[in-house]
Length: 553
Image (tube, rainbow, N blue to C red; front, side, top):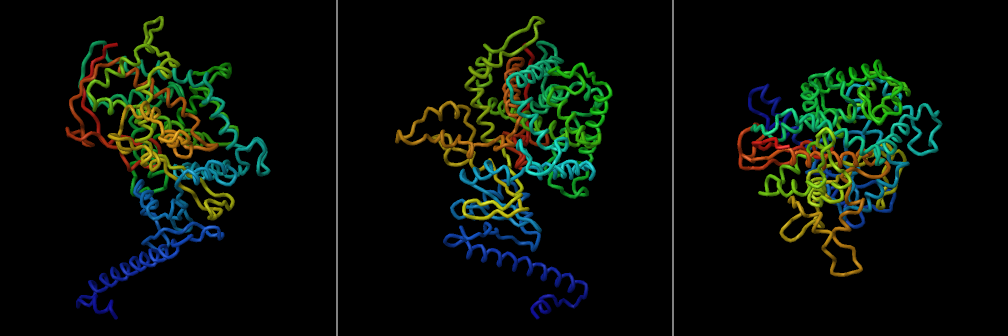
């Protein structure tokens, strides 16, 4: 009756449209009111803890679809969920037929990191493969392996079929040992020098700083990891990579192709580039180089062994390309923005570039050919400001989402996380929490000396841990993730970032001329993190800096 009165305009078409709009509004409003009231009532008291119940479901507006709109808001979703959570208890976010359990606090993070048998990260990897266009046959190679990562398989899978464990074991063996990390770092230094030395000595030029060095760093990092041939085979690789990077999150979560067709096109081009590289590498690889730390075709030992493992497991050449692309993306999409932020933050503070240059100078050497090299152990041990800025960048610019799929019902803080659903937890909130507040240097600001000064601050009670010690616990501080799937490339990434900053401030005098907005126009506002990339690692800057730089070394 009410609809009929409100929708009666005398024009049939308009009446139908108004009636439909009113009906939709009523359904959405009713759903919101119902779920808000339900959550309010259920969250009183003990909120169903220790009664075999799942975490409470957060309110939503759209029936069945649930909280999809909340997920795409990035950090806002986590802050909203935390504000609704009684005493930082787990909460549920409904997404169609599944639920995502949103977890907070160190106790619940321990649940994620210590339950590798019932909580797996494989589903996230498979989602990326699926949405990147991997064939069902190639996906089946991964899907058929239910054996887990432990030495003893949890399912009856032949050794040849344990693709998850075999690929996972390559990380500790070839990315975490000092020999391999230093080999990769030295290769990066060589390639980065070559890229920067294309500008003549004492030559000055004006450029957009981040746009300039991110390309040089991408070339150096990628060559050190997968070899040099990929660039001669794919001359547009650098340009296509940054287009792909800008759409990685949207593609990974499976946004429809018609909404981001250009991003999917960039992804297809990157897959084609990787396929050309892999085909060329297989055709030209010399087996005599099996024990080499690095060779032209596959690049690093890690890259070569990874391609060999997935090929032996039965992946097609295109499947190999799709599987290797996220590895290339991961190192570049994190190390390069982190390097950029360190330089940007130094530019904000007059004299800090020179301070960094003076600090790293004792670690900068020349080899017999006169090329710039770095004493990496000395750089790590005797560059406290650079190290502090690196850590502060991880704290203030990293937005990692720890994700897992629940493979067996798991208890968490008095609730039951049901098999088949998913878990999400964010690094952003604890890294910006009040525990990091220091008088004059709030947690939401970048303080270059934070990781120099905070460790010196002792608690009033000598029996208590300091704020710094509490903040650095692995269940509070996890920019590289945690548990048995913590990022294997974290040591190389760290050394690459520190080396890149050291080389850049040593080779160039940098004259700051102003900040640039996303359209390349001068502005008085420094770049801010691009929160549309929330959840995937170090957030890139929205904007750039116009600088005049002169190569002096």
